[in-house]
Image (cartoon, rainbow, N blue to C red; front, side, top):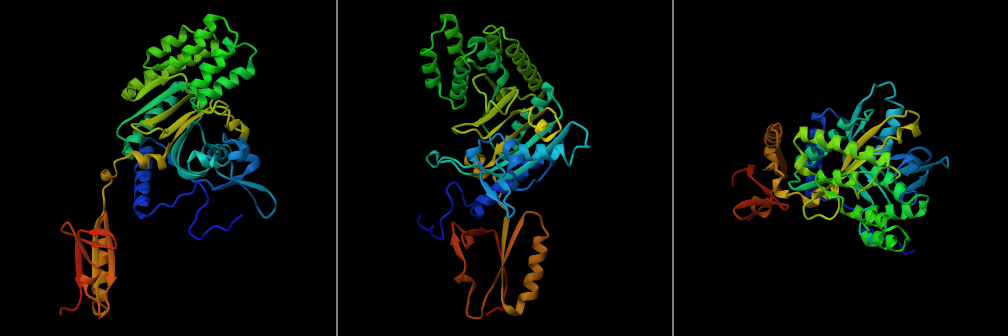
Length: 402
């Protein structure tokens, strides 16, 4: 293996240069402020966790975890999501706190991705977890908050696709009795949006025509509230029926929030089938192929940490949001450059301190030597002063007049 060059990074890792870092932090603050107004308290957890606890409980496939050994030979993992660490905290350090518990976070998470997929291995997520409430109102709350958070981040046009893993679980058991492997193959196709593969599997099965037709029609269960009506007539399975009833109740609450225009029903969407236990949703921005947020109900996770409780939540994909928002909407700070010589140092630095006391002001100082001039540092572009690639609205000089 060749030695990496000094400027190279591991595959999937990314540098955020100053401009991008400013945008990232701006989005982060706006979203966390929004979540705080909804009653969610921020939590910070370690980057490293024990593999035998958080690693094994995570929804991330084992082969995608970043693992390392500590000095005692214990296997650690770099966190691959924030939901599992928060479940650990709720079950331990917050075990005396009454439900429901509302927590928010912003953190980087790590997952080993296939190189050819062109996806990053380090992600930035901002999200919430609502623990201890199994009601449709709780599910609707996190969906409504996801919508408010996307708007706070500056995403103008988007849709939330809402599904329920219980519907598909019951429906497949009813239609494909005893065909466990076939059921799993079809779920995998839906998970990865492989509709061609879904149809191909069904075409090779010896099924009654009405069963085959119903299974094929799953791919059409996307749209408005009428999708729930269509789904109900396709199945008599109790779990599927209960799942559709739960979705309808969620939609009623979303109507009360006044956000239904952002939501569509997609009963082909299942998320991670082993992880989610109820409703699941994804948010898609206009003209962007990957989801910018995702979430759902996961009622089985906390019992792995000894405190069984229902839970629901979501995360925004902050990296992807930066790709879709209008960066011109991010307000630039007022930049002031103070240029001074040694004789006027004290006055210049006092002036800088006074400007820095103002909100939204960026102040930089520049010391000139005896042989230097102001003009040697400044550029003028479109009638504006520039220094080191940045535009300054005001230039203050504290130098000896020549």
